Length: 156
Image (cartoon, rainbow, N blue to C red):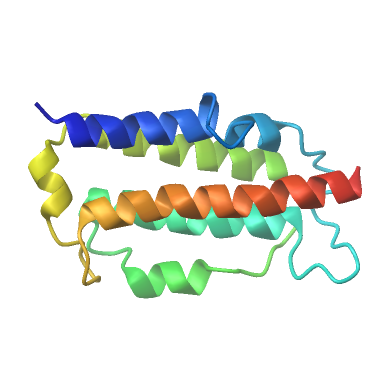
């Protein structure tokens, strides 16, 4: 009946664009970020908003590439993009947020074609299964959302 995969899909959708238990959804908070302040780093802050966004993109995209069974974009490729140098000419808040949303739509589309048994399969380049990967991606998103919300309040 695929109830577990449906539950994971629901959690991803709810965290990103619904009414999650912890407060406001990811896209709601991220849509409010002023792209002019996205590059600012308050004193003592290890990362800017834009750095956090592109870090989140890296690991959401890693998840997508694993679901797609992409043999080119492996763990090394993802690690090279993690905490990448942000170039304002190449990276923007608007562009990054659009990419982040698109990746999540693609993840949902792929998951809707899978059954619960898929969650037990081992992830390429890792020692764990898809259940662990998907739940980890959700937790990772929530963790960094807290940082984004806090930094955004500091900057506004």
